[in-house]
Length: 485
Length: 95
Image: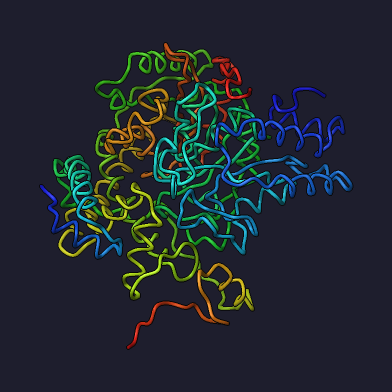
């Protein structure tokens, strides 16, 4: 069968179940395409030999009742994988080989999938362009020298370029949805507490959440139903009745109330984004949804809040990298000197910047003025959503304020880089689920995404609306394999 | 507000990240522009607002106090940059 890598996850699962394809054939096809695509720099660590062995084993005794039978998959290098190096995109974890498996990846292997390798990302998931990775930039398959978004940039690039049929990322302030938007793919950030954080390298624990990234909404729904489980190893994992999202997926969204928040019309937003949003509203109406204007008055305060809360939590989480227990160590004259040199040489510039911001806002005399203030504003932002959801079922917004930008364009101005996440950050602060779907192209031919935000634990509704709109939008990604010689 | 070099030195010490003069100046510039942006929060009155510490509206679950994993010594020490038998090795702390 030709063009295996062009098939969606759902098609591959179908073809393996009906024995038209073997896991070995599928694995070979994705590995070969990955090998030809090194210029994208999507992988940090390849594990192809083990993938072939696992595929062979699967084919010898195939369990076709599984949800991901013999499906090869590469995952973001923020998930701990037992016996396979996990770097979080950082020099400080360059040689770290976990002795245990993250719950989310374990769930995936339990359903029959096979690990192909670990995908590039911003260092400790801190970035919006994958440029802070110790392992170098990732190319966007849409165009040369274009960022794939971040922090799950290796993941978005690999899915868009069809190096993996599907993948998982993590999203602290937009790190799944923004790269999905930049590469014409679908990315879901689930409700906080839906997917276990156990075994995910921690960035900001009250915001971090793992989620699926895929070519289409149906594949995304299937992977979400696999990764979302209650886990007692994560004290913030929530024990609620999870649905078979892919089975209950429907395009019937008649009468659903969709909110349009006026505050998301930000100054300087390109006309194309505004038009895309209007088009999205028309598509939703065509599907029978009801459009309602709403207000989220504290939207403009979300980014400043995030840039206190996230660095504060990061400074605390990253205190563990001390050169003693694991990871990189620089020699020093005494213990303190060793700590300081290890962290100065082991962390990149953006991570150091965020640790310093976090340390400052938590330091004596500044805690109330910054950290406590941010927690209070976070409450106001959550209240905005609670009020809105009294009137609507979901909220529709653009995913990002622009399309993908060139590598190097924003690296010297941290604040302009942070502004990328203006539409995605409020969702993390309120702990809600959000999905980005490709919805059109700008004048340069680069993809643009729309975001659908749901009530807590209402992944099914946003998936359904995304599924219905996807059909109307009928998006086609313009990828010409420019990197394959 | 303005973060000066003295403050940068102080934060770097608290963060256990060594910072030379050149890096301190760059950091001061970056942090000042980030804090200018953060200051926007002062527009809001929040005296009577409860701080939000977690969006997961559940109390922590209790579990029975049973040992579930045993003999992890080798696993725990496996990634250490320097060890001696069962111990992590660090530079001399006590003279």
